[in-house]
Length: 129
Length: 158
View 1 (cartoon, chains in turn red, yellow):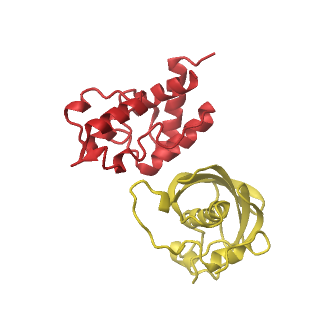
View 2 (cartoon, each protein chain N blue to C red):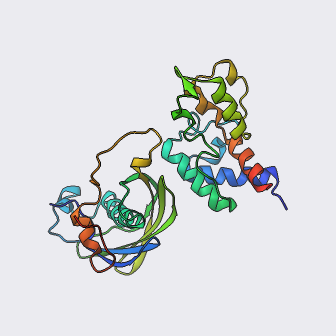
View 3 (tube, rainbow over the protein chains, first blue to last red):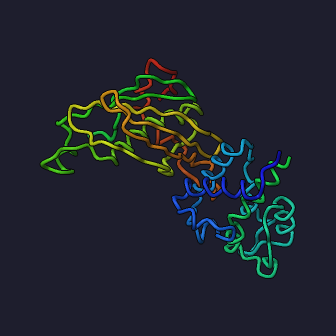
């Protein structure tokens, strides 16, 4: 039986409190991983490793968080994600809510799209098979 | 002084787990510098000892092709002071290892008693996403570390 949203959120919260050393009450659906919870690059790998164990899933590189998209000159130009890049990102990351990122696709703002809810969405998609 | 905080390996199971021994001696300078009247092994150096034990385990798992760098101290809990005459054992096992990184889980034993946990993460720095380039030579795994594995596994010729 698939897990409920609450169950997924609880387990994601436990994962993030352990990986990032934050308190439970800081882990809200809208909290951004880098801005609000202070995640750095190695933490993203840590989170992936922990999610794989907690949920018994396999997370390929670049599946949950962007991998080589940002190093690809076709996808990023002058500090902005290109139209092609946006299509690619949206296609490969259905768990991310892009909101009005299209209006100002600044690469530096990309990290703000990655929130606690993003992980919850990803896990739900993944465990739903 | 050599920057090596383990004395020998006691067990080495490639890609899986390892146990290293560290005998704490009053002859070590750092014991006198930490608290002069109460020579005690700093926890930071236990972390280094565990990082060396775990780092060699992680490095050997990829035949020392990767430059393995301590990237994160995920968790440290040490419940008792360690003083001259004590023998430490660092037990470590690989949790996850991928092309980019590895996580390890370690327990610290003092004179046969479990006194704590040190969980770490290591980065394979040539695989970093920023594309930063590092020297060709593997400057992490120098002879002094590789010699510790003599008798356990084949190590690359220097």
